[in-house]
Image (tube, rainbow, N blue to C red; front, side, top):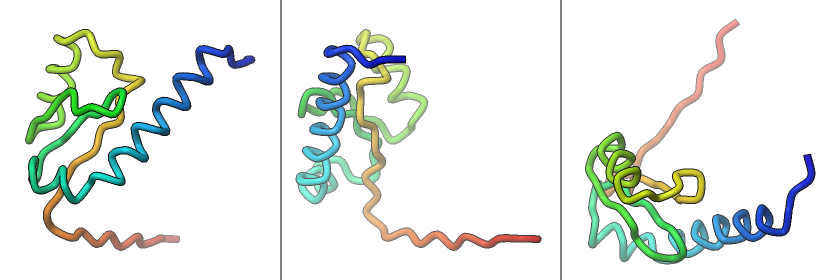
Length: 86
């Protein structure tokens, strides 16, 4: 499958939204602590403490979910330990 120019633009915008979020993460955590946030075109387009509620809210706004950067802004440091079993 070949990507169109539009596909490439959407990928570029998604990446830019991710960078925008990372650059403002501390500021956004203060404003929206322990909330899920959705970013589109370098703007916060949705906020919720519950992921499912955020997704439903975005659908009601007719936001294309595949174009949105979604992240949980936790105020606590989380450590994940991966264990492999034979």
